[in-house]
Length: 85
Length: 359
Image (cartoon, rainbow over all chains, first blue to last red; front, top):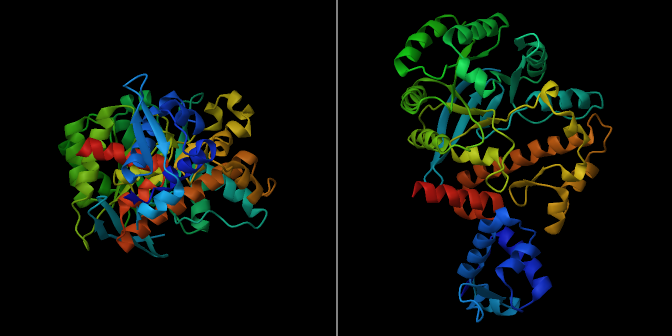
């Protein structure tokens, strides 16, 4: 199931979707695409955590480096089917 | 303006914030106020020449500047502020803006002289800056004497620094919460964790008021516009979370400003981004798909009494006040405070940080 996103998370999701659709994204991609600097790493973590908790993203462990995560944004159609209002 | 009564109208359990009802000679108002200050007062005077509306606030503060050359306080701005506040029927709260070295050197002799000067200028809300090492007992003794010097229309505004010794800070605040209509607290940028502990004490004591009880207005003085260490979240929100009712930010007096600051490009100027609840630049806003800085500049044509920087400051104040009013509405409607703050990045991160400290 999916939940409604806070507005600032939604804005970030839209920006990422416009750039990546459901292609794989790394933490660095998120930092770069949303204009976060090194001091904003916590912000990026909170952002991804909120997406995960709301069920808007699928996560896989990187095959090259098990410490890293690969994120896949869910297509909006499937989110709308899962969303709880 | 006469402030007749301040009561707790709603005590919101989720946020531990209060909605305070302020009954005045000019009507009823609510807390979480960004007052007109030295800068806004100047902008208002300039706008008057173009028949433009003043900033909508029934509170005004005046930060008094120390003249380093003459080694004395400069009261010229206060004289003008008194006239200006009378014109708009506002409650005026003067404040002696000190650096940390001046604060350390503050003695009762200095504080009492400042108090007497305020009396001689017939200020209605008379500040008394409590020296750093004052204990509660010493304060109570002084307070009796100071109150005896006020006329019936004047009110004492005790101002304590967040740098005050913690035990005395707690004791004085606890006493004043129940015995004073106003409490001023000088704060900095929350860079020191001891400041957060003292502010949590203020928050905890404030949250004890029950609906219908008399309570004080807590006025935070001297905070920066935003907290650089916390995603540049606006300080009026941060101090709202610490029971603040009025937020009078630090004034950068012209004679103390580095001239290079005047040459800054408008695109590098931090502006309050009401979408994100942070201060950011137009470049950063564009990455998010909008440009609030440009929008502000277009909404008030430069030349109507404001410079480009003046326009940005004017809207910083207005847009922050609009959001603070929304917090009041959330409390009145009883909707989820948590969901409300989550919509804004700066507020979300700050609130999350506060929850983790307090839980």
